Image (cartoon, rainbow, N blue to C red; front, side):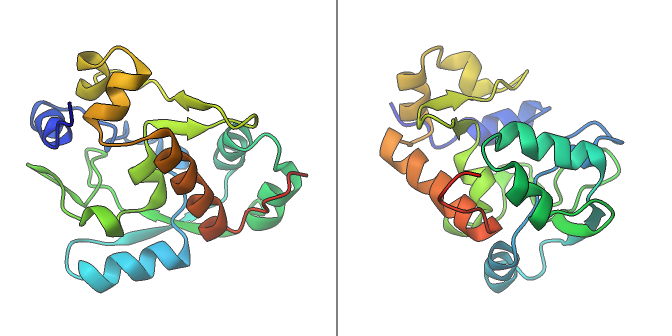
Length: 175
């Protein structure tokens, strides 16, 4: 059954998928211009974005997520240039994470956030990115149950992944 409060309950107990260990900022996903504009339009005073270098670690992480887009990743995110990511506080929490979960309206959140913890693999299959401490994953042991709890379907996850790829500038044809 759909549990609209599972992420808020998780945020209250912490840590969540909206937190990183300080010093691991290179693992944050990029925010596209379209996503930044949409967030600023509906939540202009909630926080900000950080201009982050395209480090070797950042690029390697993207290459793991998009193994069939190697040339495109390197073209979109050249080493030693920059990209935007969500801002974090000194403890590694997303600046948009409040005590009741994300403060950005659902339809304005970054595509990666809306898709997470699901990911579309090269073959079109949906996989789950394992997150230690994720309450939704702990309470819903099967992919089907997790889909229901997070109000996501296979079709919805694939469409969100496609929107993410378009917003970030990835080709629909792999390299």
